[in-house]
Amino acid sequence: MIKRIALAAILVAAATAVALAGDMPKGAAGSSSVEAMKAELMKCSVCKHIAMHMDEIGPMGMEAVKLNDGVAISHWVQGKDPKRIAAMHAACAEANAAGEACMSMTDEQAKAQLCESCQAIRNAVKAGAHLSFGDTRNGDMMVLTSSDPAVQGQLAKYQQKCAMMAASMEPSQKMSAQK
Image (cartoon, rainbow, N blue to C red; front, side, top):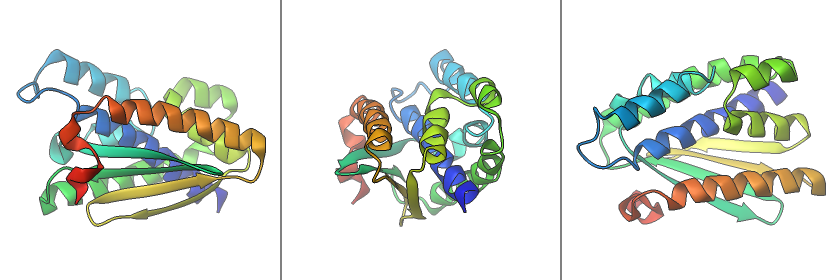
């Protein structure tokens, strides 16, 4: 069960990275900044499965909400193109399969093979965070919670980082675009 929980959490971290792709200016799809971002994502054994499909998925929206005992993170495909939504769900399934292996990694392996975001989620789950997740109509949602104040602190820091990423995105990609 912990492995399934962790891999779903790691998937959301990967989707967070994809959400950043939506921050790129229109017409920059072939730019070196997009390619540099993909190159960085390809270094993470989970995020690479999302990075490989970024062109199919396109820009995404993201929101990270602080809860009284954790964090809720939602990602969604911009627009209602069923092909893009299907591409996101397929990429997420690939990342889930890769994420399962992350829980059996040593901490040293995780530091070498996972991005900072995937490491943060892995560490929180290893410390006892509870994860709930599911697909939405055009994206996904993850909720990480804990009754342990130390783990809640980890989750609060993670939420702040995710909220900063979401805030850096174009206003048209905020939660209102999901409706």
